[in-house]
Image (cartoon, rainbow, N blue to C red; front, side, top):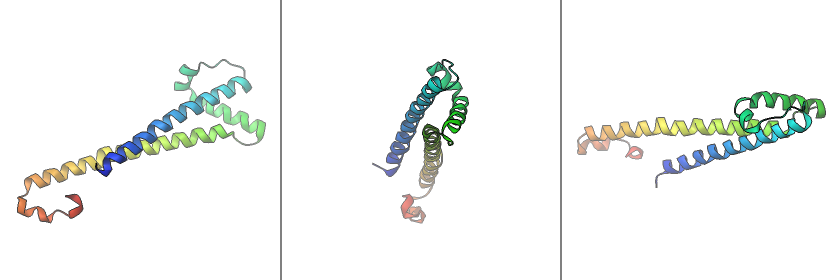
Length: 125
């Protein structure tokens, strides 16, 4: 198998894992806010999709007031979101740039005479 196939798996796996971690950390933040926050009931599945940034700000503010620094879940959520974004960027890079370049090379090969293929660099054959 080609190395591109493994790159797809690696970055696809990272996107899925970071999305799951993001959901877990979001639920943990909402649970913490339910217990220590202003006492509002949080509808986890509805609010997590639309209000996580608001809850993240509340969690950060509450933990700074309690401990003097943001809680560990804040940093974990930011790290998981960053990993997810970086993985999506690399995955889209491999999807758009690498595949389009290979398509262009294959068209170049079809247009050239078989004896002229020696002009194509070895790593692109």
